[in-house]
Image 1 (tube, rainbow, N blue to C red):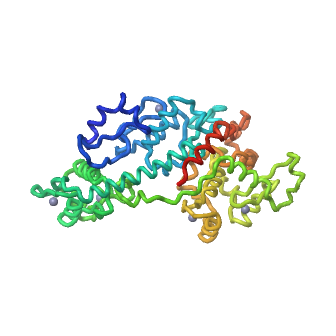
Image 2 (image 1 turned 135 degrees about the vertical axis):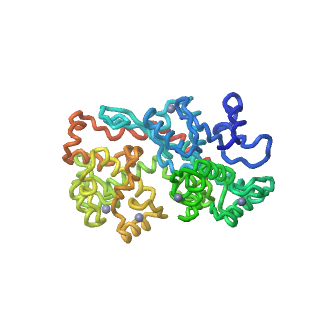
Image 3 (image 1 turned 30 degrees about the vertical axis):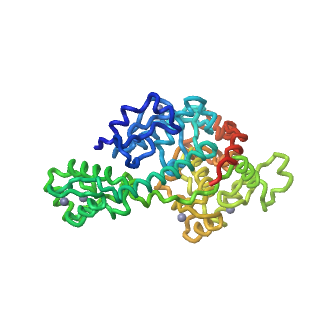
Length: 447
Ligand SMILES: [Zn+2]
Ligand SMILES: [Zn+2]
Ligand SMILES: [Zn+2]
Ligand SMILES: [Zn+2]
Ligand SMILES: [Zn+2]
């Protein structure tokens, strides 16, 4: 598709890659001063643990393949992966770390009674890499800044660079000096709409992809395959399909708007999170009094507010009455592990102030509650499956009593795993995190 990385491939590995912090540099164009199109080589992104590599620019989604591999083979889940501005750099960075230190040092671990493919098997260990780890948090922040800077620099360059000099996809005698000219020509002369030139970035690659699709006789919009060029042309013209498919996320990176810095919830250090979960458990206006402190009875905190109850059924009634959320009904047809995921998902969303139904980011807890109530979003979008991700095997709060009551729900399908005993929800989530290192690094950066 593109040849621009052929030189980089020869030079990567060896000495050159060792000198950089997050992977080998990307030599996008031979001896050229053009701004780069990526932070690192994204055509051969290494697995964090083995010698596998993934091409993040293939249409069959190299990044998904890489993440699936991490989970299936190395049992590693990356939390909030969609919010990582540059997943390739992220992989390079952690590969270097994991080459020197055991994965436990930076990841939370937990035991599940199943293999990655879902086969039941007792005490299988899994790892979660998330921004609870200070290095990970710093890395994510840094990648956001660096990626945005790269995109803006590249965009500026592409708008004015006069050495583009490229022939039209359709007509023979047209050559454009600049990228905006080229994109405008496609639209005004051939009614092919890629996007407004000022909104596009990495135009060279976008054109390569469009050309490749058309050469392979695939419609840009509906992505159906046609038998010959005239039939494809006729189809695209007649159906108004002379534009790229907006639902194909593969094109997201070509639109500047997708690099806008989204508001990120404030970072809560693990020590404070622990406090928070403790406050959650004791800051109760219910009849749980000092006698609870004997440790006989532990309270469970509401999924949506700080209300806590000793009896989980009372708490569930509270959730129905106060938040119109029927937990038992929501999870009625779910397996034990799916229920675990639902609880951890809701906790996580509430913690980062995101709606559990539509995913909207709210600035604070109050506006999130208002959103949930006004739009009737105190419900789970079961189809969308945002909750059904392996990262939600891991508890959001390490002492979440809600998780301990899930096994009490009768469910025949789960009998096997319950008989095997040891449903271990959490294996000391914080054990691997060095609190001193965390506070040190927190002082060192403020955004
Ligand atoms: Zn691997
Ligand atoms: Zn033309
Ligand atoms: Zn079509
Ligand atoms: Zn509540
Ligand atoms: Zn919502």
